[in-house]
Length: 116
Length: 112
Image 1: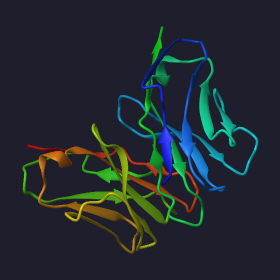
Image 2: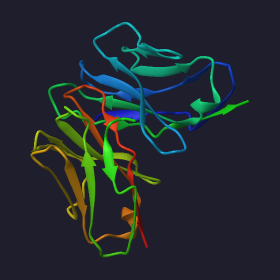
Image 3: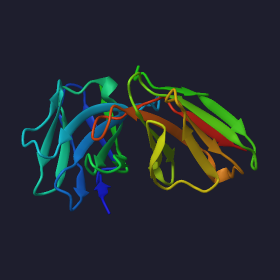
Image 4: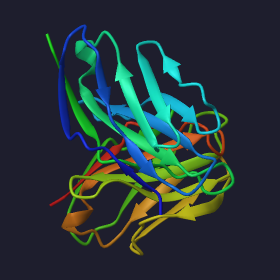
């Protein structure tokens, strides 16, 4: 069974600094997709970034980038120039592949607090 | 705005009752997913529909059922409600396999 592990329950960072959130996953599949979702205090689930496992290039979306290490089954999220609005719960998630049900399997989340 | 609409935003009801949660997916999305977020279980996949047909089931209780209608909106029916069913229920939709899932704002269900 696929599992997603986020080992940092809480993290904090000062505004304008950089922070990295960790995620590891376990799968025997070679083709899959990885995501980071953000859940602010409003409880909405907002897609931050997506990575396709067959692409070696790390995905980037503005201040958000990932470090995807396929062999190590690691998928960390780097937030540069942190802003107060980045305060949220961050969930790492996995989809097994395009030819099966593409349900999201979520980690337990990392609560990020950005301080002024 | 994700384009996924969920109603109602809040529901308060009593044990033993039945409720229906509604979801309208983003225009053009054929897949609809239901997830439950609770304090003790985290985010759990319940069920997926694709173009009106059930595609996959997750940790969905027998007391729960869902369907997707010809206009692609979906309903999640929860019956014989128990205190432990109190949670935030999300609907998400996507264009297809492996594509990003876009979430609605959720329905917060409180069982008294």
